[in-house]
Image (cartoon, rainbow, N blue to C red; front, side, top):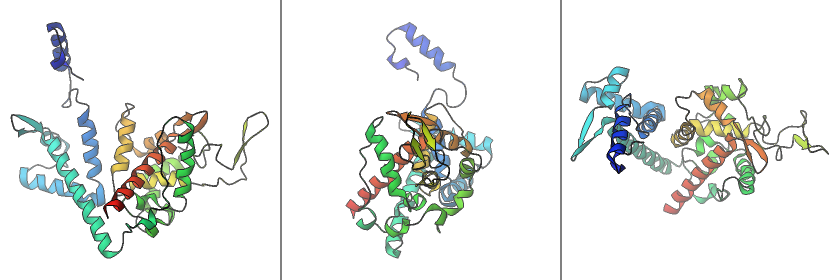
Length: 314
């Protein structure tokens, strides 16, 4: 990050000026633009690419620019747009338009659903949702992993992630009649179930800690033993729930995940790489698990908190 404006001496200013001038590429040292581009890309895929198609059509008609061509897209997004006494890149304007459009579509969809009876915003779907304390790195975090998994048994995160509540989520991802079943053919699902990029901490089958999974037990020496004939009580629920959130029509779960991954210096990941990251081993208070458990807890908090806010508003 360039700090020339905070430099106290001429030497410091010269140092930061030289640093600034050494930047390559249109982003320079900006840390926000890559995140904005990822968010724009995610928003453009929402609901069969409705926002992406609208933006492409608008730019084509208004600016005679084809955003499907990389050279033209780069030039258009980097154009300067006057703002009072300064300017902002067109990228920021496009980001603002897409966010506003997405919020409008989300509100419109919920409103239409209420009119047609397809969304249940009443307390019936919320009363059982647990309250998470969201502490980190302690026994409470570990105990809430099980709370989260118990809650999602027999429920569909693909539908819950887009704002549906009540009976409309009382089915598994594999039974989902609203598009959830199809995402099990995605590269992310194939990476987990076919390529074997499962949890590298805890139980590989169900992704839960061995302390929770019924297929594991400790012998008298404290060593963990796996019983292949014993079925994991959660089955594939953790993996299916993560896949459902990642592909649901509300992109905020995918965006949140990609931002977390990028904070570790990893960018431009494909879905197979995401599967590998979710399986990364973590250890909390001596209990082994993987990143997927933390992600499911965080996503669950997001969807349950949003549901509570919506119900209070009603």
